[in-house]
Structures are given as structure tokens and as C-alpha cells.
Length: 170
Image 1 (cartoon, rainbow, N blue to C red):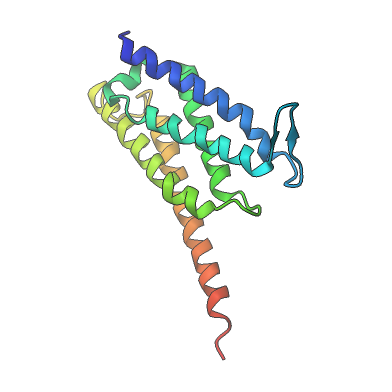
Image 2 (tube, rainbow, N blue to C red):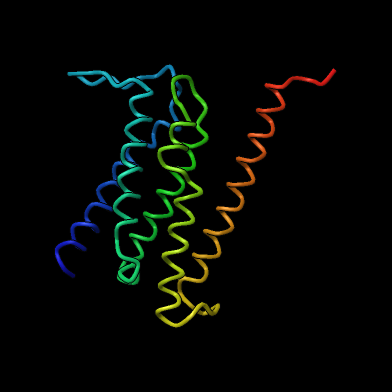
């Protein structure tokens, strides 16, 4: 493993650890802060820190050449799915001062899922085709289904919000 791949692997582990640490925000009450002796973290700071770990995780993951994905460890793939879960939570978390539209613009879950699925398809084609026994086939199928579900969920959300804004037709 060359130095660039080693650094990418270490970065994935680092950002994943940060996501695990800051995901506590999804379990806290918005009125709670964490008080340390030197400074206090507000709830929104913890959510933002989680986002600031999730975004670079995907930046690193998506810069790895797709032909090197077959060298990723099971742990790295697990981190990828964990990061997808964290991004989903950040994209729907509804509390004051948290702008989910900014999250969706900055790091679009649908786009991330599509990019990862496309890269895994490239590997599948290079290393044995896209048969059901291809080790990437299961992940690709799940990512595509998740993308479809997310796109439908957003479309329904947009339909609801436009219906509320338009009000009832009289």
C-alpha cells in the first residue's frame, strides 16, 4: 500500500471516529450543552461538528480511485455505510438553528449514493462483471435502492411543503 492510500485509509478512520463521537447530538435534547472546564459547547456546535466530520469523510472516500476500492477493508466499507447513515440523519434532523437545506446543498445524499454506486459498478465490471456473485453487487443494489427511496422521500417532502405554502384552493 503506497503512502497516499495509507493516508486516505487513516483519514477515513479519523473522520469516522469523529462522526461516532459527535453523533451524540442526535440523542441529546436541544436545550442541553456540554460543559467542559474551559469552554462550553452548544447543541448546534455538536451537530455542526458531526457534519464537519461527515463531509470530509466523503471527500476522502470519493477521491480514492475506484480501482482501489477492492483494497478497502471491511472496516472501511462499514465506515462508509455509517457515514451514509450520519449524512441521512444530518439531512433530516429538525431542530432550531439547524439548516437541513444547507446540508442537502453542501453534501447531497442522493448524489453521494449515486457516486459511490457508480464507482462500485466500475469495480464490478473490471473484476468479474456484474453477476449476482460479484462481491460488490449487493452493495450496489442496496445503494441504488436507498437512493431511490431518498429521492422519493424528498419529492414527497417538497410536495407537502408546496401544498402548505400554497394553502387550500378556494
